[in-house]
Image (cartoon, rainbow, N blue to C red):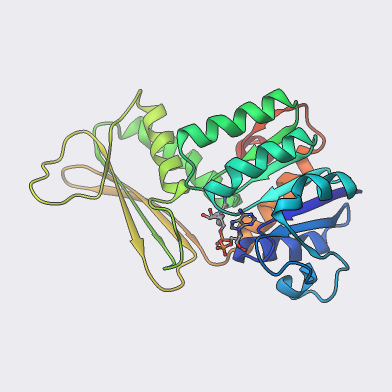
Amino acid sequence: MINAAVLGACGRMGSLIIENITCSTNMQLVAAFDIGNIGKDAGEFAHVGNLGVQISDVKDLETVLKKTQADVLIDFTAAGATVVNAPVAAKCGVNLIIGTTGMSQEQRAVIDEAIRKNQVRAVISPNYSVGVNVFFKIVREAAKYLSDYDIEIIEAHHNQKKDAPSGTALRAADVISEALGGKEYVYGREGIAPRGKEIGIHAVRGGDITGDHTVLFVGNSERVEIRHMAHSRQIFAKGAVRAAEWVCGQNPGIYSMDDVLGL
Ligand SMILES: NC(=O)c1ccc[n+]([C@@H]2O[C@H](COP(=O)([O-])OP(=O)(O)OC[C@H]3O[C@@H](n4cnc5c(N)ncnc54)[C@H](O)[C@@H]3O)[C@@H](O)[C@H]2O)c1
């Protein structure tokens, strides 16, 4: 049985992940952390009844991870939180599933270093849905054939999302850039802004949109649009739990959802 801990347990994603852990036959929730609701039962936020696992203060991360013998910590919080907490978990020998987006290159480097130094296993992905990872693969292929077309990425999310553009839009841009040998990115356009050979990236925020991503390849008399639309956050939660089950059986290292899904 895999012992799982969830960081950001009261959040939109954390609570769904806990719900999904309760459906797993080979994983059990042993710890849940957040910055509020300390002492309440984690099942309350996941709407799955009493689980007998109290929300612990993130300040007690090290002590509780050790005490509960957690094998893996699933973290969907905020960049400033993940950069502090992931190294603590790695130091405790706990494997990591990181879903937090909006990390800077410097923050990501700190996390990567802690994972490598402590020889733990980790999956880090801006998007845990199966469909989005297939979307990346299709986008990569299309880019090879449509390299001289103008490329724009448009993403839309709910009005509570903190970071922009989304980690998924940035990953789609990186996938295209890697396929084409390096591209400049332009975020939105304003004023006198003639188009070059860049990838344009645009963020829409409103209401309760779970997450839409469209990549446009626009030529002179035609355009190709590749789109993924998330209907529910369940796709991310299910993917994160699948990644957690998978990663515990791997060699130490940093993996992506491509590795988990065998893409
Ligand atoms: N990778 C993916 O597939 C995927 C999918 C959806 C969301 N996300 C990302 O996951 C993150 C969380 O999204 P959400 O919609 O659940 O947000 P949310 O605001 O609903 O939840 C975040 C939770 O983290 C907690 N938190 C904040 N700082 C903390 C800290 N220092 N220690 C412990 N807990 C802390 C908050 O109290 C809250 O309960 C965001 O970065 C979002 O972009 C990733």
